[in-house]
Length: 308
Image (cartoon, rainbow, N blue to C red; front, side, top):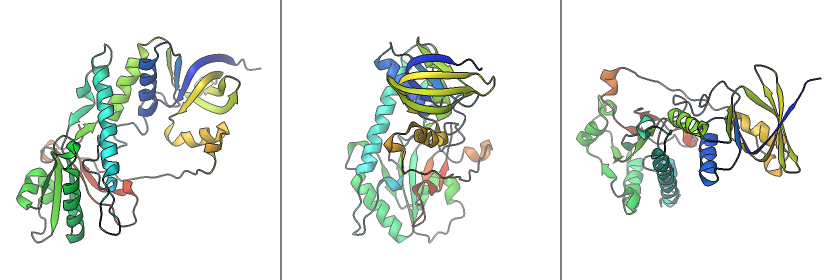
């Protein structure tokens, strides 16, 4: 018979990506006495969605993402979501600033750097939309530094790679926010995990597969298997956080809670073209977001990003 180890923690976090790492640090800052475990299926943290080449690395603050300011049928533009997203990102920056003063966290420059955020549109309809969007946003203090232009010479300074060879008669416009950022979420995740490893009462375990999740008298019981050794564990936790990316939905369904019913998952892929040629890279210092095609999901928005 296989011997099953029984362990007890206050919080079990499944997945060692940006979500679990952030929540774990927040919890320990609020209550250092908490006992936490992060259980990760892979051999290290930040391998999947938090890997810096598996996401756009944009510090999403509503500065360039046009889907955050939808236009209604009557032509009006709603900026509430852009303002909300901007405020949320400011809270993130405040949190990172707090951690930057603590021993063992490392340098913010390793994961967040200034990169201007631009929106770029083509055609009369979208140019009109962008101009109206800019007029509304710049009235809010978070967006007052945003610049708008229809001048092609100005755009050639902002994004020269995108202007070379373009039709001189094409109607285009752009906005630019100099206070945008590039975020290396992989580096950030690893700095958070490293910081957590210096705290008492924190276990970060790899090659751990959660095979079952069920309610118990004190909270939750998770069955966990070490994929390398085959060792089985039973973890009792007051709370469980599922930050397991694509693996979160099956685990949520295992839990049996009503909120887990009625959801489905489907794979989404994209095409990333990456240039490491310094001569090309130095010609583009911006994150430029455009409009998705009509009826396309927001994440299909084409963009040309500088990464740091």
